[in-house]
Image (tube, rainbow over all chains, first blue to last red):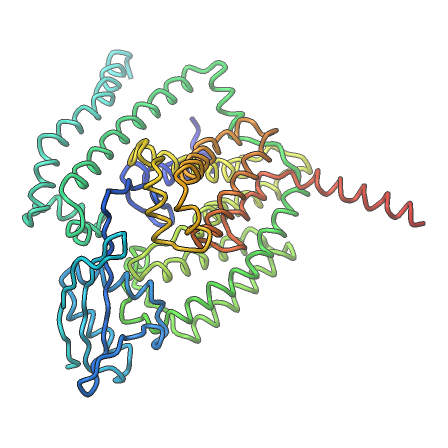
Length: 130
Length: 377
């Protein structure tokens, strides 16, 4: 097999397509296409993170759109920081995003059953701007 | 190299999956178990940090069987593809009909006019997409504190762009696209435009989430400079490898998506509960109706899997390409209507233009127009 432009590109593209499939991970710009592939367990539970903004002893739900962040992205990031035990860091990033508008937040994790019934509510913590 | 030594090397190479299998059962699986319990060794730490950063998050959400099954999958997939590639190389080197067939498979006959039309359609779409992507980058500004650059950006120490940088990039990108549309220095302009497209995606994916929306359009883009180069070097009618490689990569994406479902979920993916759960995560008016009927759920799941699994046949049965293209359009439109995932101007649908012979379409339309002109005069 001669190594020319064509053969090199064929090898790169085919390897780029197959490697993420074999190693079950992304090598951007080559991606793994495992979306919606996971089997579903019975009695599936979903979790939700709610961030409350605390001001003068009143609590209101923090709307991420207020600082231009998509709620889905915000929820996704919140979950990642929670499982990495980095909630203080997450809160600090919210404080720096809001430019002093938010100084205290409380974060809760709510687990619901697929029947929409709440199973568990956990107060993760209250965080104050340093 | 003498034949005996060649055979011995071949034998050793063939044994590699067996060595990996031993490594998997004797070391990797117990090491994963330790890592799951919070005691990862240096090697597993390196693997998870570089190839599976979501491990720290997923280990809190899934039990150990999930990770062991994933490691098993890597072993099965590696071994299967390793031996398949070995077999293909062996058959290719033997020569004869197989070698000719393989060589022919990686070429497709096309015309310079076809590529001109493809270029105009593909890059006209980018006039819309550039605006969208740059608009997204501007709206990501508040997310800046959460910026976690992907590997390429980390390697070159590239920060997230500020407002004016995005405007400059948009200006350059639009100019390059217009030059491509005007057929000026297309190989250079396409290469630069590709670089910006990948860079912008890198920025968009630097917030801990990758998006598959631009996967096939990016694969096609990576090969376009080669396609335009081929066009420049050839006559009006020629055999193109890059156009065929674009088609192969698109078809492979669908095929690999279906294999993922089969390998991971097996037949349980066809159970109505699976689709019902996904639909409940992406609730729309239509999904609320579908959830009520098991039969509909099975039908939609089986239909989707069949379209994805058989899409690769578009390469072998080009006469029937309309069937898979219609299936693909139905699949993506269905995903948008039922789950509200995607977009009416879906880039996954745009890349179907590479399966169409635009010379035929052009000739057909111009002959119709000539007839109309003749009738009117």
